Length: 119
Image 1 (tube, helix red, strand yellow):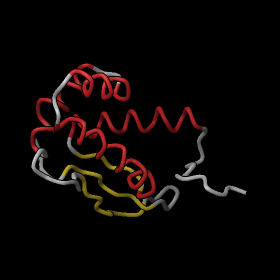
Image 2 (cartoon, helix red, strand yellow):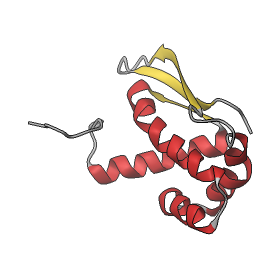
Image 3 (cartoon, helix red, strand yellow):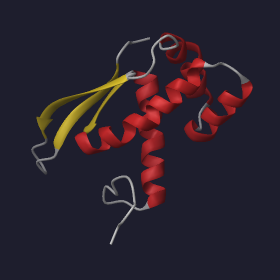
Image 4 (cartoon, one colour):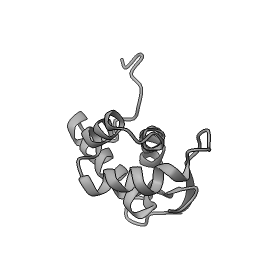
């Protein structure tokens, strides 16, 4: 029984899921939009929104928290220089999920996860 266990497993173990979401979050912050399955997009959204909220306050502890999750100087720099200042006045809702198609190979529902405002 999986009582009180939040989040989808997505057919992966914990370390694989964590690494996948780190990579996807970095890609979203660098490129502004990514295409993935609807389930992965729904799981990634709160992670990215917390990072963007962190990017709104540019100080050393915030940069260290972001760097601990993102693992890339370029990504952290882009978060705090480009993406974070765009959403300082916005109280949340930094991303949108647009459902696009059904993938032919496995009939997975695909979606585009993108930032509401592009840097």
